[in-house]
Image (tube, rainbow, N blue to C red):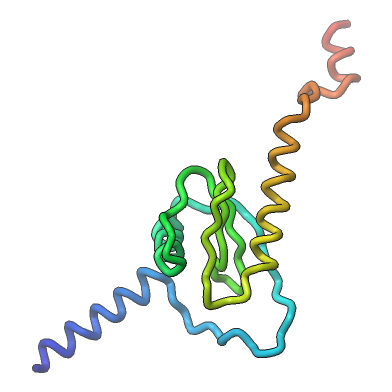
Length: 129
C-alpha cells in the first residue's frame, strides 16, 4: 500500500509539472477587468494548447496560433490561418477572444499592404552616389 501511495503522489506531481498548474487564484466574482497579453504561441506550449482544446471539446489548432494570456495562463487561442478558436469554457474568455480576432485582422491587413523598401530613402540615395 505504501508503494502505491508514493507512486500516486509521483504521478500527481508529474501531472502538475506537465501542465504547469500553479496555484492560481480563482476568477474573482465581480471582477470585470483582467490584464490580457496577446502573443504568438511558443513551440513549448503545444501540450498546453492541446489540453485547452480538450477542455473546450474541440480539435487542437494547427499552424501558427495566437494566444491570450491572463495572469500567466493561456485562456484562449486562435489559429492565424483560420478562424478557429479554442477557449477555456470555465473562464470569462469573450474579451480575450475579441482581442485575438482584432489582432489577427491587424496581421492580415498588414500582410495585404505593399511593403516599403527596407532601406530608408537617404541610405538608398547614398548607395547610388
